[in-house]
Amino acid sequence: MKQDAHTNLHSERGPLRGEHLGRSRDPVIKVADLAWLEFEKTDLDRAEAFARDFGFAVASCTPDTLYLRGTLPGAQCVVVRRGPRSRFLGPAFRAAEAADLGRLAATTGSDVRELGELGGGRVIELRDPSGFPVRVVHGVTDLPPLPEQHPLTLNVGVDPRRINRAQRPAREPARVQRLGHVVLETRMFERALGWYLNTLGMIVSDFLFLDDQRDRGPTMAFLRCDRGGDPADHHTLAMHLGPGVGYVHSAYQVADLDAVAAGGEYLADRGYRRVWGIGRHAQGSQIFDYWRDPDRLMVEHFADGDLFDCTVEPGWAPMSATGLAQWGPPVTRDFLGTSPSPAMLHTVMTALRGENELDAARLLGLMKAMKA
Image (cartoon, rainbow, N blue to C red; front, side, top):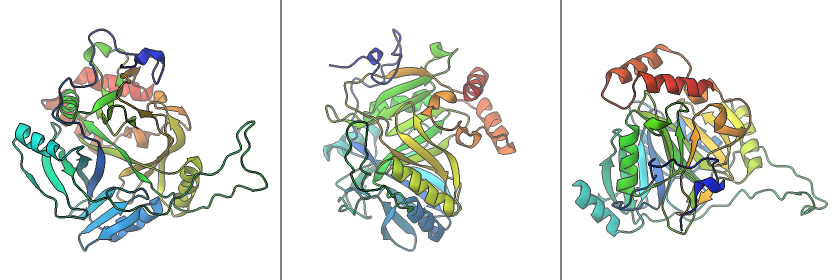
């Protein structure tokens, strides 16, 4: 039985009559998880140095490809390929069953092929309505676990568990455990949302809408994998309407708040740039800390995120800058992507002239929300 969002499980508001259901009645398949993300970088040595400082382990490397992993068993988290510029190439999702690739191939007219890389397996290559290449893989051999960075033992209220021992978290990289989610910006929000729900069987945990334009539908969605009764991350993929089309950030789980904080101090000591943090998000509830890598791509350490099974219905909330966190420092322009620049102006003008879902009213509503 589905749980109603009005029960305050995660949002004070649920859908109004006739609003988006947040799931497909008959999806082609239901992906089980986000497998990895692929990037292109000009300098693999610099990319590896940041990756180690951020807390990744190197699973394998060749002269032209770097495979990064977390401590938990599974596939690599990130694949970095040498290329002429630094950019996001796209996500890879893990199919629940081998037959899912065949169903996708029959529906989309794509081919299933062997994946001749680390871990092997088979892959089908698709493209979403925004133009992002999307891979769906199955049969990739899991990497074995690595030594963990264990959460600290906390003395909480009347339940002390640490006696005659002091807390001294090491100032060291926060060991990444696994890939959590990726966030994308798109001018084709409704079309892209429908594609991920209908093709990959994802379901919406939370919608955000422009406060004075709710009748036009949501402008952001947090999507999770539908594993039935098995819980999944509040969001594996998040998308929002905007003038650009591209990568916003990706997030990687670490052990606890102290790992987030001490790992952040280590990154600061090494001269990297914090974008926003530390705080606790509203949608997803996770403790967050955002950083820029040397190529200015944004990445997040997180801990203590929400897990939902398939029974939880979408929550609905107004989009606003202050609504992004329950506590923490004020959100930065860098995080919001609202710092004025000639490139930003060009992106906006290009979007308004194109055939997409962004018009002047939507743009003004988004600008108002990011100042709220």
